[in-house]
Amino acid sequence: MREAVTVSQLNRYIKELFSDNNILRNVIVKGEVSNLKESRGNYYFSLKDEQAAIQCIVFTNYSGASVDLSNINDGAQIIVYGKVAVYEKGGTYAIYVSKIENSGLGEYFIKLEELKKKLSELGMFDESYKKEIPKYSRNIGVVTAENGAAIRDIFKTIKDKNPYANVVLYPSLVQGENAYKTIVDGIMELDKMDLDVIIVGRGGGSIEDLYCFNDERVAYAIFNAKTPIISAVGHEINDSISDLVADKRVATPTAAGELATFSYADFENDIENYKLTLDNTIEEKLDRLKEKLDSAKKQISLLSPRARVDRYKDNLKHIKINLNNSMQSRVQNVKSELRNYIEMLKSRDPLESISKGMAYTTNKNGKKIKSIKDVKVGNLILSRVKDGTIESQVTKIIK
Image (spheres, helix red, strand yellow):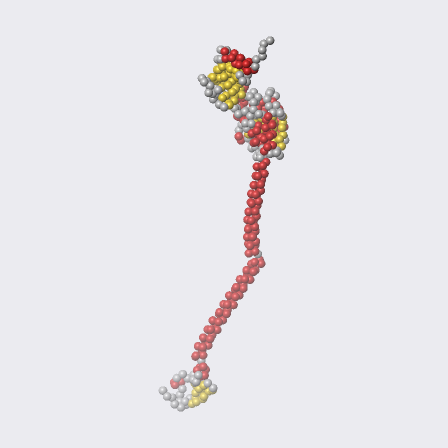
């Protein structure tokens, strides 16, 4: 009976067999690129045909390597040069690539590009058709695998941000031949439920795993939905059809959960700030309205009939006072003028002169005698004095 060997010994033996094989040390293999990834500056992908696949590794600092990956994407038909070697620790083998030649696109990717072109010409990728993701979504639908990591990540992210959010899952297949139908059914069913937003996707995978998200029927279901849709296919190397048609695309289910909901704590803070702002605004508005009301009251008071009557009364009082003052002033002036006239008349009144010792002389007919020419010798004359009249006869006229 042969002695058992360790796993390390067996892997080392296999590695030496590969190393000693001239064919495996210098292989040239053609196939289609699938699931291209980059990690720490190195690239990893599968090279496949219709029946099989082999892993390929490109170490960018590999000595002697002549590798240009600038035009290499999933679905590209390429020819790789390199060696087949065993990774002893993991017991796996791969082609360690030293050179790549691009030999064209794979059949699937040719069809995929044709579909993208068709849908683009129909306007299904146009930004003008994309709906806004609501800022405050509370009812969130999810179309994904029931037991996958995607739903766990989405659910946890949403509940961490908003424990009151309602998540409705439509369990679907996310890979395989019939997966597209369950995705379409899920979108259509959730779209009838008047939700705020729907997440469609899965947690990454190879290009083959994502075939269902590049299906034309899925594209039409997303485009025709009235509910905003987030695509979270989880594949950053190439945009899937669902990414291009969806209202918003994100790289991972976690990112979809972040985008779909809002932070309840931030929401409470926002509400409090809005309340303070609203209170201040209302208070300022009330102050302005009070000022307007006071001003209106003053205007009404000034324009009211009572106010007018009061103003007229005040005006009449002022007029009466002014008239009284004016009349008194006028009377005083008249009195003063009369006194002056009286004094002047007194000064000219013969009686006044008589009272002072002078006589007022007239002929017998009462005509005032102003000159000796007015009398003749023998005429009777009357001399009025203070206390009576003296009758006399002219006996002599002296010049």
